Length: 637
Image (cartoon, rainbow, N blue to C red; front, side, top):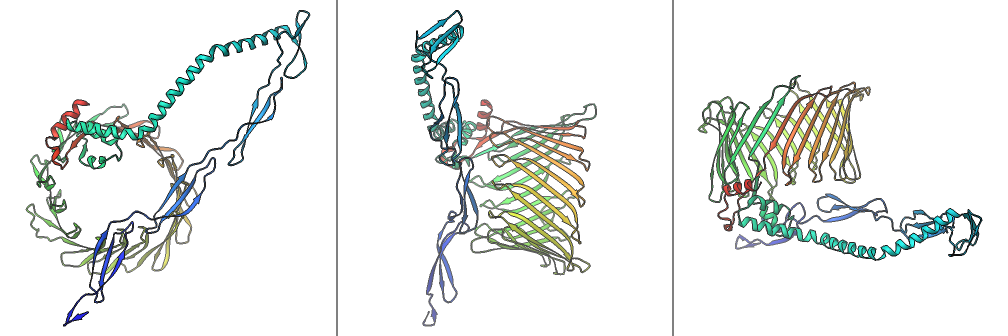
């Protein structure tokens, strides 16, 4: 719109709703092309749409599958099986005095039947209604079957005594049994109430105990209390103010000869400042000689964030600068230098935009003072972003401004394309990817002028998982080799079977690698078997892997076994891990065995209880120091 020669914007508004991948906003755009955005909205939750549902049965779980209408991410909710819903027992055959009867019940959901026997009634007679014949025989009328029964006097007496005893015992235990039932029922109700309230009361208890411990500077114990609170109140925010550091680690490495001799021991000691940054790192051998040593110096901004960090080594016996890092007020590394073993230095200078995105990096050789060396070896990296601060392009140049490589990205951060160039700026390599990060094409121009290309094909299941991939390699348009990958997933989405088959230019199989995985009900891999065979299906090698977990999901044991082409064991590795009662790793060991199962080497590492630091930014925490934390922790443990 023009007014006296001056253009006045007339905006058309478009509201862009947020999704689970991008923020929302209102776009104001003029016909002249100028536009601006406002009313930004944060990223929303997934928009789940039900795509498939399988109802559970009495014994098998069902599931519901959902797909996000924004990003196509999927999830599966398990519907647990219902269990049988039994009817009341129905008598099919009534018992007699001598024969057992039967009764059945039927599941009202699936119709399955369950049958169980009913014990025989046994003969019964009214007291005094019997005749003794001779010395050994009794004849009586049975009240149950209506027959005249004859049996020996001893059997008759035994049965009568048994019936009398049952009636007497029933009277004797009737009152105590009632009392016992009432007591057990009361305990059950109390236990049930505690069990139902425990998930509610436990976080409350741990939270306020943790708060109390912080008031008394009992940092470590407070930390472990908050760890049991789950997401109660502001627990997640409080835990961010803690740091857990393994202060001293003692490692014992045993290299054994045939007599089991030769033992070496290294002790690793690390010290930290009040912000949790390492200030000293030292390794001492069994003879007490320091074999490795680093120290660090830090400068901080007023809010405690890093201003600079220097690392020194002592290889020459003297303290020498090894690396330097400088930070801006937002915590970004704007300058870093490294001292290489040949005495040369490498400097990286980084520039950021207002959103803390890296927009330019310059990497060059320099001296200790940071000045460029005579032999200039400098590279520049440029970065480009879209309006949503997503990296979309990256380029690398030499000191003369010649492009060396470049990368393009999808908006979600996945690499889209990579290109490499020679010193004359000619394209030599090109790789493309789909938006799932899978390589789809590769091209390489060799120095001899030949052109190498690799093309990929993928197949996916309903959950978006790759079930098959074929890689075909061509040289100057002629097939040179082929690789086919296949994966089978179980009902929980775990890759249970995997194979990789190699072909030559005539599509003849040259090698096959097969892998079978086993998982527990929590999705942890518990076992793997990998076999490699040649084109004639002859075994080349085999590897077996087994893993065990504790109830918390921590690995406690791993065993790796290697076999040769005769399926004979060649080497075996065993790893074991232990944790303390606070779920911290307390020790780890690794052992190596030869083909005869004999131990050849062993390494044991023991971790002392970690140091817990508390360094909040709020004013209420004044007086809580690093020394207090360590003293309290060590005195309690």
